[in-house]
Image 1 (spheres, rainbow, N blue to C red):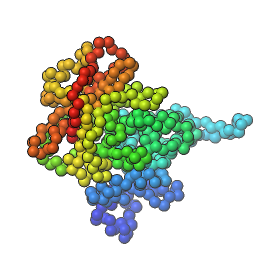
Image 2 (image 1 turned 30 degrees about the horizontal axis):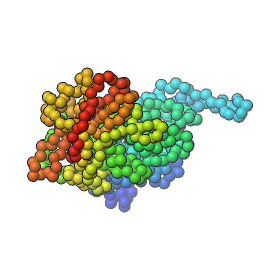
Image 3 (image 1 turned 90 degrees about the horizontal axis):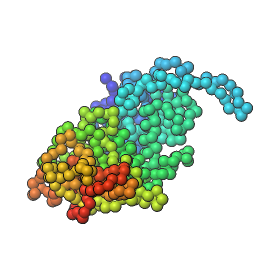
Image 4 (image 1 turned 90 degrees about the vertical axis):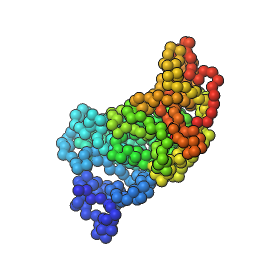
Length: 473
């Protein structure tokens, strides 16, 4: 049984100390590594947060930006929890063999094994070691300035400037290591660009390109897409486990974060689609327990199915495919008819990042934009025809047979043709006496997009269409 900090053990730990010999092997190895690198303190969640106290957990979980952002080094154990940080291996497979100074310029010569089949032995069909599929460790890796990866046949190192491994100790920053490692570093580059941090190496192209909103938007969308396929024991942890990352970005950019999205990136940030539609229908009924926190339907984390395949991201963002959202010469957005935010109830800090401590009615979004109404039997048959080629990405496997509301979020020109995209909404069934405005649930996202010019094309919002304020829940 693992030793953990609980209400009962709290006083005992303070008075008698933590029984180190009772800790699992991975934690003991991490303490040994901490001593060897010359550090006096180590943060272990299970020993620093009271595990059976929701109040302590809610408070400490929102401090991860400071905890991991100020660490000297983060230790990541890539093996199974009981395997520890050290594995048996033949060191000759990884340590370069020093040959000597053979070049006139004085450079040393090394020989090392280029192809090493055991390097990736910890990877599996799900795309990496178990630790790197855990949603809680994402912010630990992104927030830490230095990470040492243990528990694999070889040790990996990453900081804000370099990437190293025992097999390739002098490799370039862009050199490939293993697939899971490359993906992690890409996410870290996006994160640093979003935080407005200048790489120490000074030559990071991504940082220079990320000065406009579209580039920052795509950095965020790539991060969320990768994060959406991570595993969680409790699905409600999906927000709180990302709170440290959101706090760091908010501190660097001054943006407003809520329920997994950024107010400054609306409406682009709302154009997400599910990789696999949810098999369960959306419940449009009024919630009598409306004071219980709930993920809003317009957030990408709404009803992510636990049974969903994690081989691919649970969600993807449509704007990542759009190529001409801004003019490369003027560096200005080319989008028009953007839906505007007319009301947004910004909840308290804890609700913003974890949905805890808030009320259902606290999280609402009102947009003003062009709308088109119609029943499923009258509107859907017009889509996907030779003249109107609109594709709907449904959030549910079996679309509801109710009246639909198509909301135009943005319009732009690409390859000489006008393109459009927006949300598909349905009315929430609520007593008139219970709500101030008619509320709508998101049930999908639509796009009228083509990468090639099309003749005789009829846009969904081709003529003058009614504009109104739509209240989303």
